[in-house]
Figure 1 (cartoon, rainbow, N blue to C red):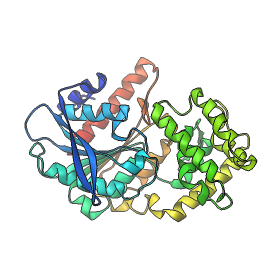
Figure 2 (cartoon, rainbow, N blue to C red):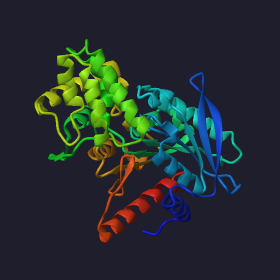
Figure 3 (tube, rainbow, N blue to C red):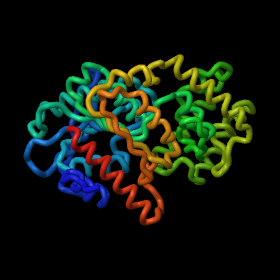
Length: 366
């Protein structure tokens, strides 16, 4: 696969950690009546450029996440104007279901008013939680007027399946079961938002708060949540819980390298939490929205993703309408916000060709 000129510029910057001829500008957006910070990345070349609005996920660094900054700077170096709005609730690891739509609308309008951006609509990129919610936003007719394409990295499709995998590592595709060692960060965020909504767990505010504190600390440190350096904090937080709370804590935050001792209890909690999530926030389910998508839809997922399994993106593809002209790339070059480890040279060559095809598709969509 031969990279286009834009893709070649993107790859050159990406391989240098995002370094390239890019101007960075802090700005503000009016999002839902609130003034929000945003960062605009502009290519060095002065001619009108394609515009992209990029959404971060549920992460403490937000638009300053290292992996995403590398991506957006590389995207700007390809010759695009890239706007990254701040989503305060998502940085606090709280759900705000309207944030994606409101941020994309505000961002698209902001870009439309910039002389550096060529007219005719922009693209939207979402990562993780932001990926699925960018897709749902793009089903809104108001968004479709301004957004020509959506690129999704690491999104989810089925809440129940996603939550079950977060707790147990179990996922499935086409009748075949798979297992991963799940990233505990997902469990901590889910518990922080929904544990006390689960019937029988209403009194476990201390466990909910402890899970929130642990997830926030993982975000602040910028270290993968499965690292052993969090074990001391897990023990410290557990010591302040009731005996019943400690049992639940052992399902959420067992020592690094171990799985919950009672896997069936983990399954029950996961399933009950998924039901509580959907009862409180039906808008978490993207499936009713996907058939209304229009424009170009580009899906991608890391094969080794431990937070949201790649089978969720395969499931997203099956629900998109033919008019969306969807494409999907499952890659070994990255896994959620982490990069791939060692690969055999032939495997890396195949994966690199797939990644070039992905970026050719994405960068030609706007």
